[in-house]
Image (cartoon, rainbow, N blue to C red; front, side, top):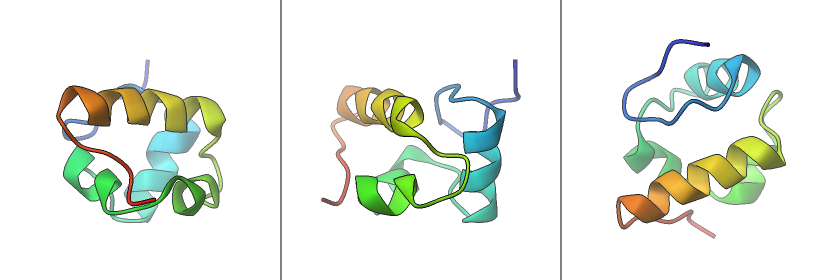
Length: 65
């Protein structure tokens, strides 16, 4: 189980690494990006984006698209 970053849900090591490299460590920062932006990051796939979308919704947030 990879370490969790900030308030991000567990999305797997490759996706965690990709978000960290992009400087994204919170759901608020995730919400500043579109799904397409995130999917363009190496290591972030549809499953991670789906998990992030659910976490954003729980916090009243959404992707920037």
